[in-house]
Length: 292
Image (cartoon, rainbow, N blue to C red; front, top):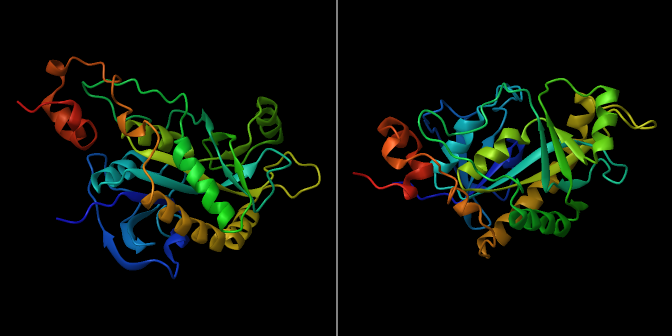
């Protein structure tokens, strides 16, 4: 049986192409929700086995809407993952969040349009999970510390607006999000954060600012060229920060309740849960049920 992997990174395929990552193996994981975005790469980083999953697939072949979020989170859960670091690009909605900076959000507005399945719970098993604080602030603090130690500028706390995409914002939309007090904008954090909470996994985002969206009067509007240019410039910072994250995570005990998110959230009478549904979700809910 393969050794459990406790820490995972979801992000671009370039992240795992780093000299510090050794003993890399590829794992194909089947899930009840279909195939993940790609094979999971497992390697040793800072003395720990770490899983890397390219969110959009290698070569960036999946739109934000097409990403199989449930399959991705379930695959990582089945490998034993307890903590997920999401690395993503984002647009800035604040003057002080400059391109090249990193933002660790602590709140989330979901403006996706119902095209993405947002929960594992269906087909006879209902759960109402609290996402009042949708990110693990304990893990988020680790991310911020690691970014700063790697020489980057980290902003702790902001509201992340997730839009459907794949298009970028209109100027009116960008101005509206700023009036709401949002700090950054992207296309993938919802439902990823919600599914990680349902799966009782710590989840935090290292959001790399690539642009000022389209609201700024004197800066270039967001474009694919601008996003890729800034991400490439920041890639080594992200890799160095990840080494620091793994070192810090390995040497600390989490001070959060993520691992018990379903406690008190399952509302269905256990006697009424269909066996097929229970079997399907066993890696997530098994500790709350007894086999008869």
